[in-house]
Structure formats: structure tokens, C-alpha cells
Image 1: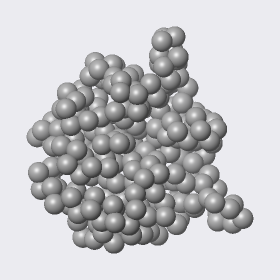
Image 2: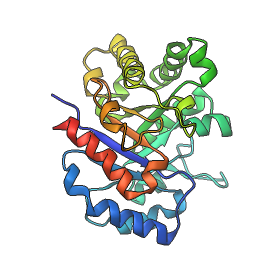
Image 3: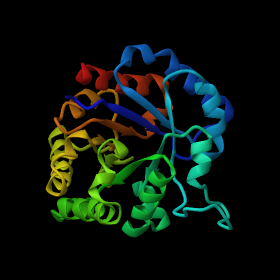
Image 4: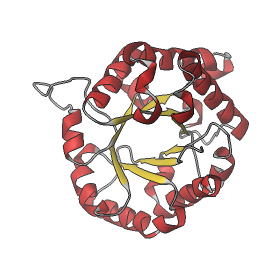
Length: 257
């Protein structure tokens, strides 16, 4: 049975009340053309409540971009507790995005802790994994991906995957650089990640969705999504324009059908 494609828009630190209204309205208007694809948007934390109201009864899913690694709320100024995201209507949350790792020093251990907290609070973590250009050029892609995924499996157990989690492969060298992994490179990385799960539990790997997240655009989405182990995309810049985002969703729909 084919896994349902998921296309997730990571708005990062972008958006305004007016821009969000325009963007959500545009996405909602085009959902019919990608009826079999699960569509997710992840706005900035301060906009989640507004975006939930804008989404209304549409089938757009809502997610957070980050959460605290604390199981209980308390004196953690500036942090967002997972229960707060859940209460505001989020069903997903990004964990371990490359920008969180690179800019804010999130280690594999911190990412694993956030993954576990997300699941404990009823959220589906979208676990982001990926290598830098230096690591790819040094033929260390599989070593890096294996380490990052292994840290979470060791902490949470392989049973935490399947329908309970999503993996997003985001080659850091292909984010915002104008470079994009070829369809073959993306598929190879996804197949490796699926194989790592299979090595731990052959029954769970087939139900785990793995997204590609490296400069996906309308003109390359169809080819990237054709990989047997590619189950959709984590979209950055292109998710801020409804026509581009919908065109990417249409690429997923074409493969889903």
C-alpha cells in the first residue's frame, strides 16, 4: 500500500497577519487539485492561533516549527511547550531542523529529547536530518544520517516511528543555496534512512513517511517525488507563495495517483 504523500510548508520567521490571510486563502482555494495529499503549514509560533482560525474547517493541517525539550511547563523564558502547540490545534511539530542545529546549537541529544516530548504530548514529530556540503564532499552523508537517526532510535525506540513520526531529509547544502539534490541523490538518501529503520524493525519501515526538504520548487517537485522512498516534501521558501506551494502539492498528487 502506497504511503500518503505529505507536503509541509515551513514558513520559518516569515509572515504577518495580512500576509497569512492571503497565503492561507490561496492554499485553501487550490486544495481540490491535490485531494489525496496531506497538506501541512507551520507558521511562526506567534501566528499559530491566527492561522488556526484562518484554516477553519479546511483540511489543512497545522504544525509548529519547534518546541521546548521540557516535559512540564515552567520557568523557561521564551520557550514554547508542546502542550501549548497541541492546545492551539497543532498536530505536527518540526524537530531538529538544520537551522536549529546550526544556529542554536541543538545536539543530537537535544533533538532526541524534543522528539520524545513531542510524542508524549500527542504531537507527531517531523524529524529533520541532513548533512552539510563539507560532509557530503567528504563522503560522510550516510555516517551523518545514521548518527542523527540512530540517536533518536536509541532514545525513543524504533517503535516510535511508523505512523507516529515523519522523517525529513534536508541536505543542508541544498537549502537556500540554489543547489538541489538530484532525484537520484534524494532517493539514495531516503533509501538509506529507510534501511536504517528496517535494520531495527522490518515491520515499521514501510509505514514511515520520509520527506525531501532541499529547495523543492514547482519545476522539480514531480521528479523529486518520483523516488520510491520519497513521500513528499518539507518546503521552505516556496511555501510562502500559494501558487508555488500548490504546484508542489500537485506534483505529489500526480505521484500519489
